[in-house]
Length: 379
Image (cartoon, rainbow, N blue to C red; front, side, top):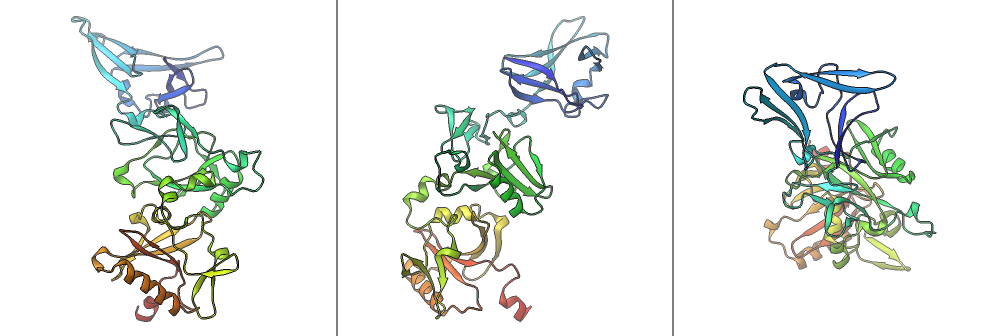
């Protein structure tokens, strides 16, 4: 069931609601002459706003005395303005909203993601399942409860964040005092009600409770905004990562698990035994760079492109991705790793780990924000 309601705040916009509780579409504020998001509704009609101690409402009159006009909500939730000449009585639609699915507020429900797929536009975010089996249009729920909300958790791994590139951030953000992304992340992590955060030109924003009106476009993954979705630690490793060989780069703690030896070789310390460089799964390496987003590309050399990555604890890393044109095989790559590890010096950038996949070979270094040594030597 759909119905129209006037907002209770000073914007005096009107909403198209569905099922008595879900806002389906909104007109934008009333500025005294038009509704700012739909000025065309006033082209044929003159609206008047009335508000007093007893009632608040709009009325309108048709500007052309030779025309009949009516506003109709049809069965699919479309608000239409229909007009007809008095002499013909042939009704036609001159205005309708919303005009596209992307304009419908919260079309996919809580934690639902509106994509560009015309057949299945609604999907659940990673870590969530549909409320109704095989139907994501009614919203989604968490697969794994967050640690801070789990009364039985006495020492489990902490919640973390999944970075998502979106075309439109969720509705109803809350401004946060965080002056940096790290403070913004910490503010959300310490707030058990916080579901996600974003940090950009407008500063820090957090979202509490359910997320609504999230929109994603797979064709423009590197050109949107970034949302950091809070998830239980177990949900930060998807099924592909669990099947792959290698550790999870996103949750790896280099400060605790990797130490430099006196001869410069970086080894892992676990159970009082030294090992070679840690090897990470390709899926976790890809996630750390937001699927090798162009925004994270630092440059390119003879080896191949170099990307900036970020771990769940905020540590930044640099990843050298072996060019497929190099012709180097896996065995040659393994030998190169061992050679680089043995030649490391305390004054050079540390090699932290690697990733060897049937189609990819990647070296992982500590991130140096002040450019490389060759820049200072050769300008």
